[in-house]
Image 1 (cartoon, helix red, strand yellow):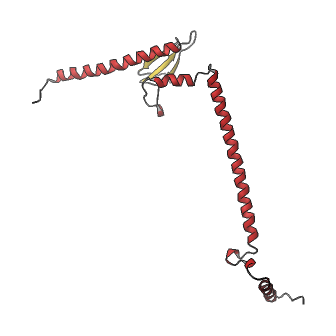
Image 2 (image 1 turned 90 degrees about the vertical axis):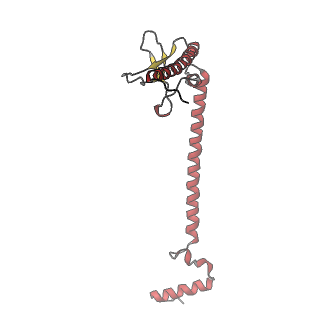
Length: 180
């Protein structure tokens, strides 16, 4: 047997559940904000609601970097294609990977550029070698075919006496006299 509740009581229950979920997300966000402050006291995690500033993504979490004497920097926490992405450990990994004061990051980036350059050189050499192979193959094919008759009538498979007789016949047909 189901219990029938008035609409106002049902709405209160739903609101309480939603508030609890929102509070859980806020508690988690506060924990991540504390982690950011451990990395840099100028970092903070903020929610940007309806914003008209072009540098801010509306309805998204942002990492705020307080810069004394200047405008604060905001980094939107977004996923693929600008989709919503909640705060998490990935923020710390992203910040570490993009820390330009860290010499390891510079080393990793320069290593990646060097490897990319090497891969491009290998690809360039491979294309050049493939072009040479293609040209050599075309030259070999051209040498196999002695006249315009193509591969259907290869003259190099006939006996030399037969070839000589065919040439004499062609010369007679063309009106060239036999030098004998």
